[in-house]
Length: 69
Image: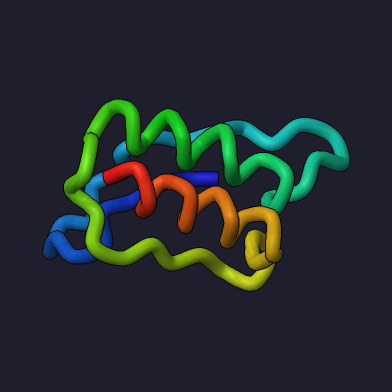
């Protein structure tokens, strides 16, 4: 799983997480999201994910970050 800056023409990868065994993207998202926002602060206006990461729990993670900035 990779976190990329998609607003950039080059789409650089900011961080990535290897998914082991049967670990799904949805359960791995909070850890990767936390690392990326800690490293790059408030440089994000939008967060997009594919369907494998879409869940109410992950939406709360993103909204929780937005409420602290």
